[in-house]
Image 1 (cartoon, rainbow, N blue to C red):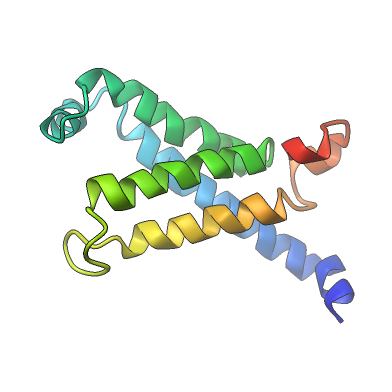
Image 2: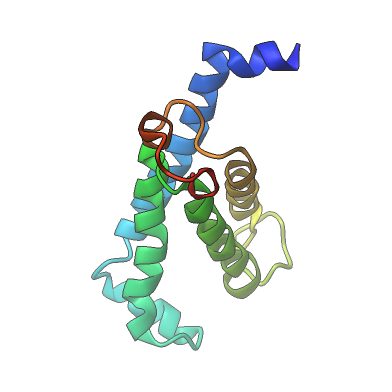
Amino acid sequence: MNAELSKSKLHDIAHMGMRASLGVIFIVHGFGKFGNPGFGGWISSMGIPAEMQIPIALAEFVPGILLLIGVLTRISSALLAIVMLGAIFLVKGGTSLTGDSGYEFDLILLAVTLVVVVSGPGRISVSHLIKKIPRFLH
């Protein structure tokens, strides 16, 4: 039964939808950090140099694009999992699951990034179409 389910078109579409929505979320979050003086000031108030604004934005934006198209998905998801761990423990403090400073959304994003690390890009992806990319880079 599991073999049949994994070969179904519905499974492929659901997997692509999960990967693409995760990519879009990080594209939007990363893009909003570029050139945003408010974000630069906010990270400075946490003791992070304002010069880290662009690398932080790129760490979300670029992997988001790669997830959306399905290239280097495992590496991109692993990087985003690290970003989410930072969000949970450094930004939110990791003390409250719910509320204004809760990390519930961050935890969901972390879980989805880990699912993509394990499952890869799926059959509806550029990686699957190219097939010359080594499997561990999918």
